[in-house]
Image 1 (cartoon, rainbow, N blue to C red):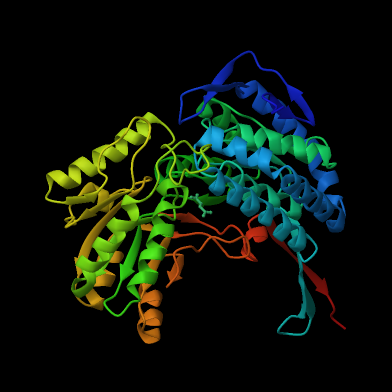
Image 2: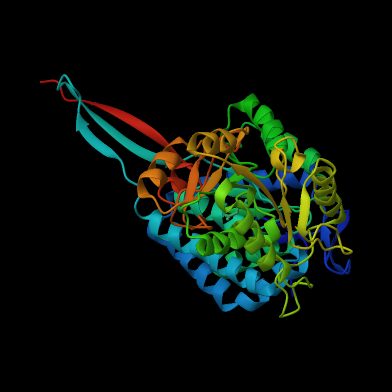
Length: 473
Ligand code: SIN
């Protein structure tokens, strides 16, 4: 039932080559998917360019209607999507269901935003003309999405692009293209005109993406993925001075002060660490705990983590699925081994089981350990200690990343003081989850540019045009 071709100009198109998509839990082949190359990219861009003016001129209410109908269809086929996400990405079914609902929220939010794009009308300071502003769609966009949320990261980009009146080329991640392809079929089923969204799965991203970024008809790039790839795409996008949105890597500190409600902090830690098996850019990466409560926090967290059930995501009892692939599994294992070789102690977990890596807690982790410096993208919680607010902030901010931080304290004064000094785009205050379609998601420093979701999300796909209207007497 799931389409496996390229989706271009409203039609499914075959390619000369195909690439395999496998279940990370079992290695089973799920599908052979069309492998788009530069020729397919060129045809897709032609289609997006041809559809751009008509889509921009489509009344906002009609664009909103497509998004609304897509949301309804997505939810009515929720179990099909959830199973597909679990099969191609590995997360437990309960989490895939939550992802379907998160994905649908972006369609709803941006359907609501589509009719609220506004401008200004004001008098110039000298009174001799009027300043009028309007906001127009930026034009055809290239949307590159990651494997960790194969559906929600697509609707988080497609939603605002379509709401703003932009057409799009979507390149889903090689590991997880199937959810995106099924979404393309849903969009077609609910009446999205041909050419407005085109989907290009590929196992060879560079030869597909490079010519698209060099084509002056493309006007915007939105990318979610690693900082390393983001940097390279930014360099390529500079050729045509493209509008860019970059959701890049994180290295989130999770701060627990001695006055915190430890039970709540552990619950928040479980969510911030284990959502998506830790394979998320907002996953808590470094646990920084104030000395007097460090031992108790570590023991409580280790006890909870040791009870997490490791099983294929399709098993209803699964609480933690496999890592996305063996490369990522070996990377996570390497980070744990490095920490242990520098004196860290594994309180629970610590070694891979086949494609799986168990929930792991490491205590006494020195600052020099790679696990504190690199984005883990796995279910490993390294704990270090601090003494006092100043040291906590210095440790938390000692990273090139600036996506999110989590902070547990009973003091409102401290919460505000520390949150304002944390060098991140988002802060979870006594809360282990910040992601929501209605909130501006994004980072500072090397974690990216721009915001997705919230009121800001649609602005990324709009350009402000200013009209000077002469009113001189
Ligand atoms: C991401 O990991 O890229 C995004 C996660 C989220 O939206 O919560």
